[in-house]
Length: 417
Image (cartoon, rainbow, N blue to C red; front, side, top):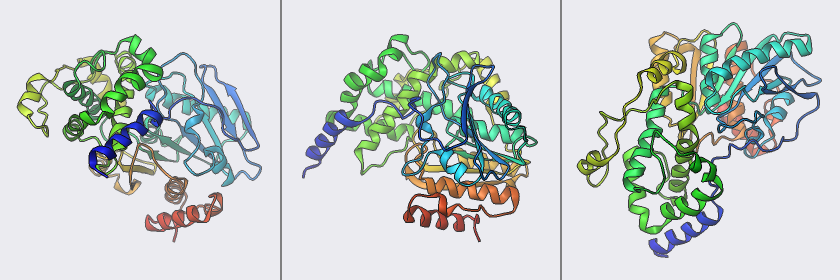
């Protein structure tokens, strides 16, 4: 089969089946274990608390990932189930831990509010159960990974330790510039295809992106075989992760990053009190004509107020008094793996190296973890906090293959002897 025919077939499949946005919709609740209750906090945030009959008097809090801006506050249930595994509440309570999560008191960029809401949830849990947990473990994904890291750094007296997965923990400003650079370079290779810019998104585009504009306008354009060369150059210049032998991953990467540009840009500017993206001094390279690219690409200057707020409220320090384990796919196109070595440098500089462990997962995708991998990370966290191995971890997984993978990873990273 010729390369052109193969690419045309892939394009046809993508247009029919590729989701227009990452799986971040709020969705419907998964199967919840016995002993769970839902409620609304005074802030308006929705919360979930589950206490199993065999509670070991330890609590696991879950910090969810990004939810697009909007007035409805609800737990993003679609983020509560691991691929090929049970729901997160089921997995946690099956191990004897209590489980709690919250929607946060705001959608969109919710890092500061998320930290406060999770601290409030610890108090709420104690009030509802009339018992303070012996230890509180914080687990977070994506934006929740950053929330987890910052909370563990700042409040070691509240959080015994954290498992931060696929989060922008290394450098939040570089993360914003990564998304901004991608949109600016995308506009150079696909001029006029997406209205607005890297720093301004029309409300009409936000309203129509998921249902019509992306699937009907953007996807056919970028998946067209005639655009393959431009797509390749875009990904080469931005260094966004994809698998060259799997053309569908190139489209998925573009789709995912553009989704964040469309839904996170205006909200981020509002929350940060200014425009944070700055590419004025940047020299882009990797295209067939770097001189022309750098001459014509649109340039932007960040607002000082936004940079001040990022530096003071969104940047991790690497100063750890409680253990932190991070889990990250090496081929993450949304929050790149380079955050992990950046964070490790901070940890070394603060002399906290013994408190930090990173588990790299050799795979493409954002937060693309198996239940066995997440459980191995959690087992390592429990060992680092308590000095004891996780009891019942193998039995909590659904099949023999997942159990074997858990045992391999846990032993490889020292979570089991």
